[in-house]
Length: 347
Image (tube, rainbow, N blue to C red):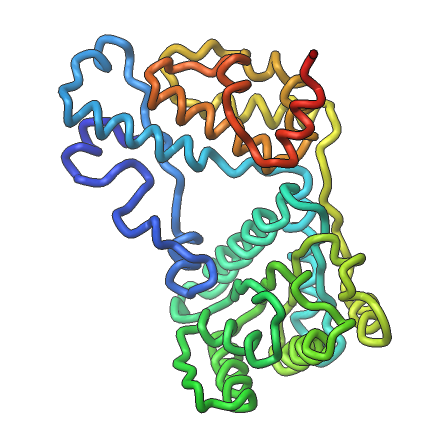
């Protein structure tokens, strides 16, 4: 555990290296930092030790707790478990396939954990590969990219090259970029390619259709499992027409959505509450507000995480050291959640 004293003497805060704010999952360096990171939960000092901290120690202690609350823990929800299980299953099916490899689409509305599920699948697969091939630390088993808005085939190829750290000049044509990417992926034993924001590709446009064809070509050249995540993919044009039928015939789909109010929702809140590091918080307060939290967030995990993280950060900054219904009411969430919460408040 990292205490206030060790944080103050090392000059960095618990779980927040000096360059960590620049982490990007869409670069190889950033992705590896994400895979290697192990969340460190700071100790909650007893009241006497807390009061004895001098100014610098108090600052470091609070910064460690603020950093922790800004992230909290990734909770293994049923959606995350399902995506990881399906992704692993497909990777084994594809391992010896020479054509027609299967893929996975994670589709749903905003704030339902699609990106988190995709990243956790990638992290799991990378860890498994490292255990399977500890003698090959230079391998790049997982690639994670985000689909650019109005993506073109060249833009998608450049995103893959950028992740791999390949130099791409303005003069490089798409064939050169594709060949370079495929060559590195083959040499580095890439087995999983995660493509987020896939809804930015629409088969109803010429560029979208060509970009889809380019991804299909990559899947034929690279012996990897492709996993897409995006907003309402089945309604955004990716599965329309002849090309869409080909995708639908090769990809399975996991749909994400709001959590129903029930045991998993309450357990999720309890897990988040147990990870709080606040001196005056009354245990059980948040689980006792499970109905209120469900109404206020529409059951969206993204809105729930933002609300609890924000309330915990505010409790440290203002010095109240607790989360209550009143303090939760003071937190502005996203517009969609705010509309739902305002509508559920008594007049």
